[in-house]
Image 1 (spheres, rainbow, N blue to C red):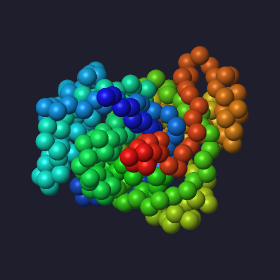
Image 2 (image 1 turned 120 degrees about the horizontal axis):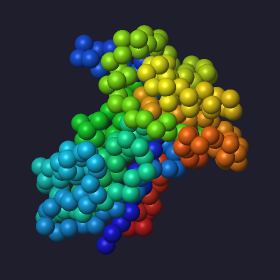
Image 3 (image 1 turned 90 degrees about the vertical axis):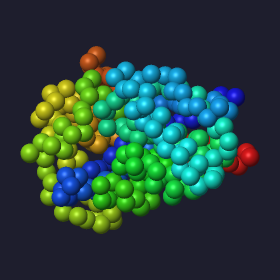
Image 4 (image 1 turned 45 degrees about the vertical axis):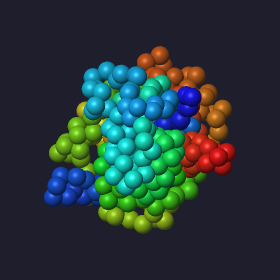
Length: 289
């Protein structure tokens, strides 16, 4: 039987770079919130121990895809601890809506959805902590998607504390370019010395993103979208880009602005969610059982 699982996007409501470690990784403070928009992952169980990704991603080899890597990682961890039922396998396909290099966490969200869904479907019984630890080996943003709760993140993004930001409406716009994260983090002009502050202080400051100036400088498309959106509402880059978002108090206000968008601006309207669609789905599945 085929089951479907949400793989939601995230927004970084703020993002501050507080330093750089000796290993090159940047330390940061950021606020993650999910939105009710994303990819959909479909899974059909197999009984021959095989993992097949039925939807190829252009430019990404099958075994390098985060979806396949997540499935194999869970399979090994569960098998090593004696919790993998014999023959566990899966056919996996994805309906892709989130752009690559968009700052919406698409790949990390896909990996987290696969970890959470297969752990449930195979009956492995790994805890959220165990799944998040596995996810961290795939990417710094994977654990927040596993946890499924809006979070304040520190360190390189792996130290998470639950948060309850206002669940606003957002117009999310894609400038039509992809920004590889290293392009931003390697730029010599990136601000890397924002002071570390408490979550209470940060929540009472105007939100901003330290990566935004670099993205606007290097990608004129990002600058154009932000310049247009800022005429209507508070707007920022999410993650290292390329997507930007404007925040509104109501859905209708966000849609009115989207309707006025120039033809070169591609966007959608979504609601901020402190409990992710994936977490809501797994809770409902668990209750149903």
